[in-house]
Length: 273
Image 1: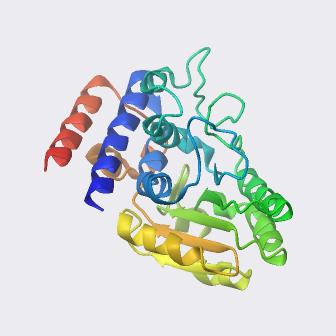
Image 2: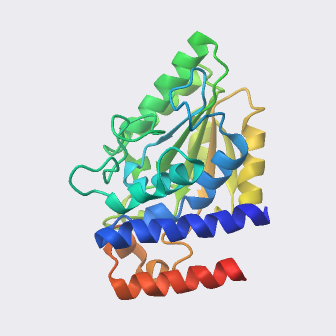
Image 3: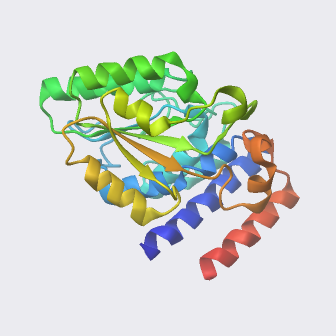
């Protein structure tokens, strides 16, 4: 997985350039899902950048839609659009808004941002795939703060009731949300037991930044006869020292030229090492 680890550093570099060009953005939650995105698109997603609407393709719905900069960086690397687009994030006339929009961006399968709704859409798409019998796997990424939304649990009951074993979801469990830590706002533990009680298989990945662990979890999920939740224990702002140390404040933060240069230096060193 050394090649994927290097790719993750490249993606982090693109995320920082994307947000640094604008000067502000959702950096913390973008950096915490990099490994999950890289592993999915490198090893598992049946999709075609030259034919984004391909019938029967696997789909990824990032319900925590504010992580768009991470998704966009991976899609650009896959060839869905030019990397030059990344420098237009959230600017007038852009195809890359702050939150993912399926009507603007090639490779985005569902517009998200209103927390909880993307996950319901993922469950509905998985049900439709079952009806069509097209063999697609539907992936979804939800946030831990988002998991406080009742809609998440309504969708989870629907998925279990309809035996949607083609639905594989991830919780980005970085323990922080916009207003504070998860435990301060509305604690989720025992999160794995909750998902099992709702009829899901559960895999806990203790290091949500380990490509090998994530890959193994996805491979397990593909053989389950239930929908599967992969709980990724992650670090908000992972891989960039100033973002990690900012903690909750990295949810959306300013990235000036000095911070961008510092991040690029850290990532260049990591790529060389």
